[in-house]
Length: 68
Image (cartoon, rainbow, N blue to C red; front, side, top):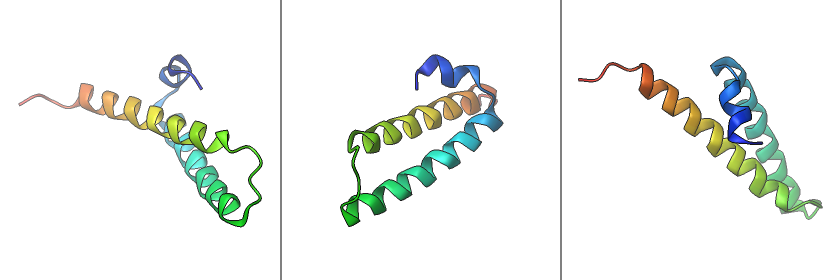
């Protein structure tokens, strides 16, 4: 997932995708623990995608907040 793709989505879409990625990360952790994980690079991709989405959401939240 690229940053341009993330920025093009609305906040609701990003929150929904964040939830899906967190579920996937949870499942990947279980697969890793049980030795069933085949694509180990996917763990890193999911973590970074979660970070990207959280960063964009935080940037938008800060831009809307009134400065004191």
